[in-house]
Amino acid sequence: MAGIDPAEEINELAGTLRSIQDVLDLGAMRKQIAELEDQVAAPDLWDDPEQAQKVTSKLSHLQGELNRVEGLVRRLDDLSVLYELAAEESDEDTRTEADKELASLRSDIGALEVRTLLSGPYDAREALLTINSQAGGVDAADWAEMLLRMYLRWAERKGYPTEVYDTSYAEEAGIKSATFSIKAPYAYGTLRGEHGTHRLVRISPFDNQGRRQTSFAGVDIVPVVEQTDHIDINEDELRIDVYRSSGPGGQGVNTTDSAVRITHLPTNIVVSCQNERSQLQNRASAMNVLQAKLLERKRQEEAERMSELRGASTTSWGTQIRNYVLHPYQIVKDLRTGTEAGNPTAVLDGDIDEFIESEIRWMRRQESEPA
Image 1 (cartoon, rainbow, N blue to C red):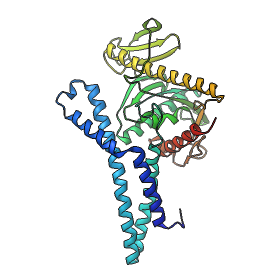
Image 2 (cartoon, rainbow, N blue to C red):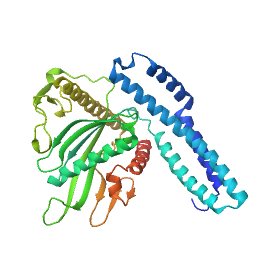
Image 3 (cartoon, rainbow, N blue to C red):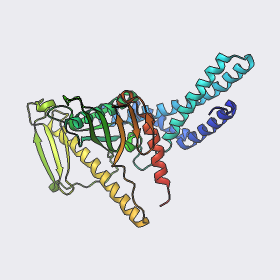
C-alpha cells in the first residue's frame, strides 16, 4: 500500500467498514443481544444445561461481534486524529505509530470482512471434526494427533469450547482417528475449507536411520445438527456395539462397557463415543455425530443433483489441500490459495487464521463462478 495517501486509505477502510455493518445489521444484532440477555436473566435458565449453554454461547459470540465492529470504528476515528497530530507537529514517531496502526486496521478489517462471506445455509452452525490417519504408518498416526492438537489449540486461542467424543489410539504412537466438536457460532462456516487431506514431510522421529518421511491425514468437517433438521434414522438400520473405553496403546481407561459404536448399515457410516462414563450418554452423543454426518451426506447429494441439472460439476475439497514441510526447509503452503507461512511451529500451535481467511475467500469465488 506504499505511496497511497493515508487519508485516502482511511476513507476506503471506512467505506468497507460501513458495508460490513450493513451486512451484519448491527440494529438487529443489538435487538438479538437484548433478547438473549433477557433469557440469561431468567431464573430457570439452567434447568436445561444444554440449552443454557447454547444461549450463553450465542450471547457471548454476538457481544464479541458487536464489540469488534464498534472497536474498529473507534480505532479508525482515532487514527485520523493521530495522523493530523503527526502532521501538525511534524512528529515522525507519531507518524510511524499511525502507520503501524493503519496496517493493523487494514488486517483487522479484512479479517472481519471475511466473516460477512459466511452466508451458506449451515455456516452459522457449530462444527464437528473427524481426523483420520491415512498413508504413512506410525508417522501418519502421529501426524493425525498433531493436527488434532492444532485445531484444539486454534479453538483455545479463540476461547471456543470443544468436546472430544472419541479417540482411537494407534499402537505405537499417535491416533488412528478422533472426533470432536467446536462449540461456537459460525465454527462450521469458518472451518469448512479445512476439509481434505493434509500432507506432512519431515525427518521421521520413528525411523532409526533418520530418513525423510511423507505422511497423510484426512480432516472431515460437518455442521452440528439442530432441532430444525429432518434426519430420519430407522433403528432397524443401526448396529450398536458396546465396548470398554481405551487409552493410548490399548490400555483400558474404564472398567465398564460404556463406550458405544454405531454403524449405519445403509451407508456404512461408523461413529463412536467414549468420553462419558454412562453408556446412555455415549449413545446419545454418538447418535448426534451420526445425524451430523448423515445431514452432510444429504447436503452433498442435493448439491450434486443440482449440479447435474445445471450441467456443472461440483467442486471437491476432499483432495490434498495443504503441505506442511519441516525438512529440508520449513514451509506450510495451501495448494488452492497459494497462502504460505514460513513458521510451521506456529501453524501447528494453532496459528491458522491466515489460511482460514484465504480459503473462505477462495471458496466464495468458487461458489459464485457461473456454471
